[in-house]
Each structure stands twice: as C-alpha cells, then as structure tokens.
Length: 637
Image (cartoon, rainbow, N blue to C red; front, side, top):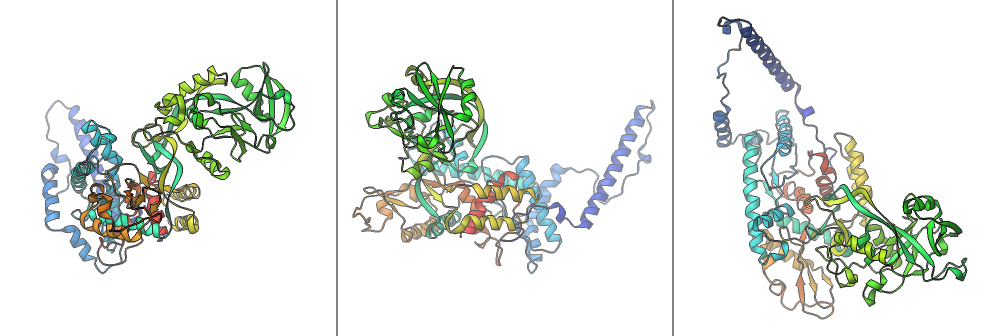
C-alpha cells in the first residue's frame, strides 16, 4: 500500500507563492475594514455632513467593487461547466505524474451540511493545489446510496413497518428514487461551492456497474476462503430488526437493573459435608435480567478462593475478594463460613433460577464451568453464561460444547422456549424476571445502575447481543489481521495519533458481520438446501448472476424464484432439489469499502495505474468506519 494512502494534509500542500498571495489580499482587506471603521466613527462625532470618500484610499480595479454574487456565481459556474474547465485542467496535465485523492462517499439522504461542505472543500484544495504543483489530479466524487437510513425514511413516509413490505422490488424503486433526489441536491450544492470534479460520472453504490463490482468482490473473497456463514453472537438492533457491525454501534449511558441472583446447587463441593445439601447457592450478579431465561451455565475462576456466607440457614458462595462489597450491596446480615477453591466448584450441577417457569424441555440441570474472564473487581466472582447473548459467553459455550441457545426473535420478543416470558420484549421483561425471582426467594438484592451501553447508530435505541446465522469476513484467516496491521503501520497518518488509534482497533476487532436483514442494498448471492440446510457456495452460479447484475442491476434477485435462476437439474449433495434464496443484503460498509475496486481499478479515472490512492481525507470517525472497511477487502484481495 502507498505510504500516503490515508494522508490528509491539504493545507501543507498549498504552494508558498499561493499562500503569500492569499496573505497579501487578507492584509489589504484588513486595512480596508479598519479604514471603514475609522470613517464611521468619525461621522458619529461630527454634526455636519462631510464627504470623507476622498480620504479613503480604495484600490482601483477593472472589475466592479460590488460582488453581486447572487448574479455572478451562477453565471460563473455555468461558464466553467460550458467550457469544461475541470477536463481542460486534467488534459493539461495528462502526461504528468498522477495524484489520486479517493473520495469517501457521503450518504444520499439529505442536503449538504457544514460537515459535508467542509469535507469537499478540503478535498478541492488538495486537488487544485496538486494540479498547480504539476500533477494530474483527477477527482471522481461518489455517493453511498443503499442502507437503513433511506429504508427508515421511506417506512416513516409510508407509515408502515418492515414486515408490512409485500413488494420488495417496488419498495426498492422508491428507495432508488429517494436516493437519486438527494444525490442531485447534493451534487448541485457541491458544484455551487466551486468544487471541481467529474460530476456527470460519479460512482454511485446503487448503480448496476457498482453493484456488480460489490458482488464480484464478495465472490472473490469467498473463493479465497475469507467469507463464511456461521451462527455467532452479534450486535442486533431489535428496532431495525437487523444485525449490526462494530462500526454501526455507538455507546451512550443507559440505566439498567442491577441484581444479585442465587442459583441452587444440586451437588456439593467434595470438601463440604452433607449438612449443606439443599441449602447451598451460587450467587451471580447481572445488569441484564432478561438474559436469565437463556442461561446455560455459570462460570467461576478456578484459581480464586470462594467464601461461603450464611444467612437464615441458607448458604451463599461468593468470591472471597468480593465478600465485603457484596454484603454492603445487599444490606443483608451474613456470617462467614468455610473457604473453598474455585476449582472445587467446576463441574457441579445447579438448578436454573427460573426452572419452574420454563417449558419442561428447558428444565435440565446446568453446570458450573471455569473461564478466564470472570471479573474480580465487581460482582460476586461468578458469572451467568448465556452463549446466545454475549460474545465472551458465546466463546465459552463453544469451548465447552454448550448449546448456543437464543429464545429471542428478530423483533426482540421471546419465543415459546422462554416459558412464561413468551411474547414479551427483552427490555420489557426485566421487571417480570425480577418479580419472578423475588417470589421464588432467589433474588438477594436489586438496584439501578447507570452504565455505558451499546446503541444503534441509526435509530439510537439500545441493542442486544443475539446469536443468529450470518455471513462473516474472517480477519484471522491466513494471517490477514497481521497483514492489516502491517499495511496500516506503513501509511502516513495526519495527525499522527491516527496510526495508534487504527492499529489498536485492528488488533482487537472481531470478524466482520457482512449480512443485513433488510431490503435496500446489494444482495448476497447464495442459496440453501431446504432439506439439509447446507449453504450452496456455487461459484459458477455466482458468476452467472454477477454478469447479469452488471447488465441489469440486482432487482431481479428479489423478484424471480430460485427455480428460474438455477440451472435445470441442480441437486444438493444430500439429493434434494428443494432450494431457497438468500434474502439478506450486504453491509453498506462493504458497498463503500470496495469503492477503490470500482474507481481506482475499474477505469473510472481513465487509463493508468491509480491504485493505491495517495490520499483518503475524511473525519476521525472513519477510523472505525470507511478507513477500516476499505483496508480489509483491499488487503484480503
């Protein structure tokens, strides 16, 4: 990758002569303002009307002193466009070394604002100054047109929800018209700012050529083994009813219940006598009571010491380090008893705290496991594990072969596996869970806590972790993570703090969730066997659909039955001929993340080698956004 791939220092690129000229005119303007102020003050101190115009020295010019911008700007822009000034500028430098600033696409869902205006002006300064310095500096603007914001705006306008969309193609046509409207409005606004570029041939993520490029990139990543479909616990927005990537989550303060819950042990540690039988409980602390119906295990630290606390003939197990804070939080009177090792708890069975309120099929005993993520700074030193609702819980479940159980539907409501909580929304169920625990005598304490909590970047509502089948880009395959870190480290970052920020994110980022459960976007070209459930990664089929998208766009994927799209005689390895289409679309960050593929390598800048770009110039929010989602596929491919 180029050393200057993400550089963003246009001001330093202005030639010193141009800078001096600007300073000269600013100083002259300052003098004129001072003289004007002096003149006005003088008129306030004199009762007689005196003509002071002869005492003010104004520059003599061949042009009018009145700007009349409302008249002159439109005619000036018209003249620039008529005479193709931008293209003459490029032609003048056709044999010069190239300078490529690749445009990060603004979202086409409203007029330009101060942020988008500033962004385009800075880019224009860089393009024009490098042209003055002798470079060929083409500029192809782009627009991000797919995604949730447009869907939300349309659904609000239509006064309906996602589930009420019965004609997907018609809905997509309305979404396209919505994006086209604001694309034209933004284009006019940017041109009015005097920004030079190939405005008649921008890259547009909803165009058939661009969609074809995205599908091609997805297919090539799949062929290289970077993409796979799996069941994982991911961020899920219950308001938008879709999966979210890390870049689509923002943290805000949220008030949540904080509860201490006792799990009845069915077995005793070997060092305890039988007097504890039926009276011993493991205590956990949680701020998400709604996840308790999904509890599949409890975790302790095998190397830590745990204290048995007695209260009214019942015995509670809490980490020794946290005994005092636990007693303080519960405001209960306890007497301290034996000390036991965490490892003596591992493997013991306990009864689910909501067992009698769950369906018969969910009332089996759970087991205590050992993990390395049990926190000894807060809580009780024991953690309730719900693999379907937490990233660390998910990995613990995988390690111990525990079912990745998730009784929560797309809209955030419980299914029948949640027993008495069926039909309730997750956050609404918190109080019901707490009341049930209280009535069963298993709730030791409850409070409210304010903490930083993930929210959806679009609807601004709290999100949850939910285990679902999704498409992922694996960042640890074939050393990809190390390659990403190496590439990012070789880039020149301005300001320099951007390097450490980016490297830190790349070192810890999870696999990229690429699928979204929406309608307005580039489709994921795949199909499944209805009988065995196997994903058919049919590369030949994908290439055929890809070619058609380049010619027609992708709407046909949402309207034509899979039987019409598949070659006659297609059979699954299980012998079945019953197939279903993938309904998910791709993450819009993958749309914009392969813009380099469409623009720099796709010939939109003309003949020549323009990859990699010299500059990506965007706001600091794009470290976790476009900078990352451009870097990952470019290195992987």
